[in-house]
Length: 291
Image (cartoon, rainbow, N blue to C red):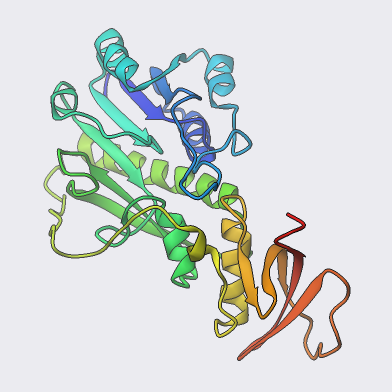
């Protein structure tokens, strides 16, 4: 293990889960830096921030309870934290800002990042959203080395986890944080054994890159499968209102569940019953005017 480990993240479920996983495996970081609460602007179109206080605001409290030095602040303070704690290795889990090459090169064993997709697919902003949008029944996790190119550093290891239980965005983020730490611990074990040549250089022209979700990206499609529709609604509703286009406007979806087999009755007030090709979905809705 590096003599000094710095964990860098945010006030998010992913960062909190990463810290908890490191503590559970008796590999605590020597220090923690999290992005300040005033450095997470909302998205265009009136949608809420990608990282919200209700995700998991307890990362600083968790650090304090375990005697881990912690700093919270804007990006300029990250440089101060590195200069203060002089880490040999940095693990990044859900940090929302680009890090300068000079700062990356100042750490002897480098910076490793937990990215929530199977790189090179889904580089860029909010990979979890786009995997749900594209109908994936799993979420990928990649541990990669950071360099001057965003999400293009060499891949160290990858894993996936399923979404059969329809977790929400916060729970998915927690699982990303835990899975990423397991990849990191595997990397440390390989490092101790001298296995340091198993990193895979990414092809910059391969894979995909997504931007921030737009309001129209939250629309559900009745031609999806039933389970895909429910996964999407439950997975993204923390981020913004998934909705169904209707002849009279938009129904904003608050809840979704796979309907019991054979349910063909008229929906109850506040419900819509969507008949997909492989089953039916019950949606709890309100009109756009009621929101």
